Length: 461
Image (cartoon, rainbow, N blue to C red; front, side):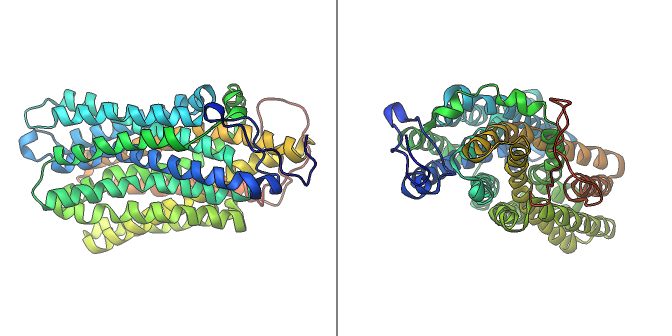
């Protein structure tokens, strides 16, 4: 038993399980919690980073696949679309897995599973392999997308609300940066005249290292493991689905453009694989690096405000892309695309920061206080993050399918960009109407119960 000003006893470490965790208690956080949380964050980032690299592996491999592979541009867009789809779908069970196995244990398992698609790709990556085989092996790479969901759910539980924007932004940004890192590695290998198997051979031992590091240095939280029903409760809350839609606009853009950028440059502007590889990594790199800044800005100014104006900026950048595409201006097109990547990364950080704030506000509206309110917020926000991440990643599928159809119909990506612009306008409208409109009192939107709710403002979310 501890008083409000006393740090609880250090957590039990038997079997790498922590029995007591109270990050909202400042004494506990300063004396015990922060060090443990930062260590788990670091090794979570390592595993998630490699997971992102494996998920986006085929966005790089298609650059190696010249005419001798017998694949059309439509085939390549279909391949990357399906890989993105699998990565989105597996995020849901990966979220549940943290509660079933524990954060550390599932990080070990999920990191080890990355060996399957990597070794499979190493085996089949040569001319003469059928498109159906490439598609099947590519689908396996989708499991790398699941690492994000389990990692964010796990890390969300380690940090206090006042630190979540920064911590979740750093965790996700460190994972996102796996996209440009594998693209940079591919650039170096292509430039040196190497083949795709060299790239795959580099990642196989890195996967083993990530799994071993998780086993040695990460922890499980007992209170997260025992809460397997949280995802069901989160799924019944309308805010989970509103935020899922908004996350399509930010993360869906980031991952979709990461898969498609190089192919658009090749098919619309006639860039060679090496010329495309020289620039494709820049956008994902900057978008990944700025994600923690988006989380920090959301901590300081409110995630809804940052997200709202970020959608405005994304709309402007997309309008410039439409003009550049119609004028066939490669320099303007590339510059605007990089800006759009940066904005998608900034929005990733700000929208994800909104999630714990929303559920914390709902806890207060229910009359909960102190640790009880914090526990309620952690419970539902952690579970909802996996669902939101899964739906958001489906935006990447839509982007690749939109590019595929646009090239089939018009021979360029212009039609797809028009559709993306319209979507960002809708995201702006929803953010304003649900989280910032001041003409009527906001209440927590929930389909779980019909009882009257107290007035509640989300302006600071």
